[in-house]
Length: 276
Image 1 (tube, one colour):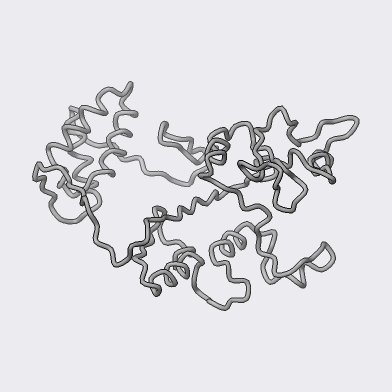
Image 2: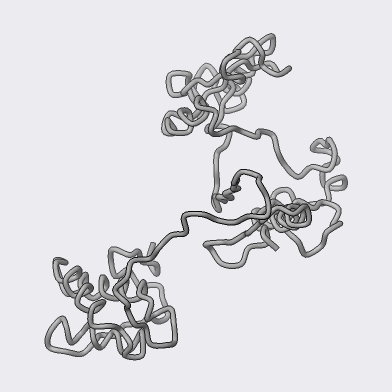
């Protein structure tokens, strides 16, 4: 898309008002990397890191790719992320072999992976074998199947079948479907499900009560059809604003800590409402 770029090219700037176009000075690659190091690390880039970057990026096919590679690697160094001089001691990092906890509870982790775009969940997990109500055929009809078109619903040949109760398919937990289908491009999810390492929580949302098209606007305390609002509400899980300013992950962490369980939370994508 004009005006944007990726890590593998210089982008297209026909629609941009301006862009950074710094060209490092120097006759050799070593001198250019040193100049970039001066700009990005205030001259603190170590000789060892500079040599590694020069060796790695020197194999790129053209000058633009070499400089792009050098910039990308410099911003991964410790010198870029600190303000003091970094000195190597030559020793490998040692991992603690034992951790002293105040609790004998086994280690558990919740990994919250938020897909910040559009997910067609009805083509990711699909009704497959259902009775007495044929939910699969209802799914195909709602997704446009008719005498003239197959619609956008997936045929069973493109679904990976899973049972609703691994080990006892006859017990499908009081719902009409004894099996579901996972999208054909997610075989790893099926494998993990069959191994009881992953599960689905379907029909989970932010409704305070049952509503329909005639009353949802008045009876629902959240803005259902706004991506930005639902992103925030999904992280908060607090329809009544009982715990204003907090996220569901942060509240869970508080409960665990107050119960004497050693608990820690962190994000790899900046500050998150979920963890407040």
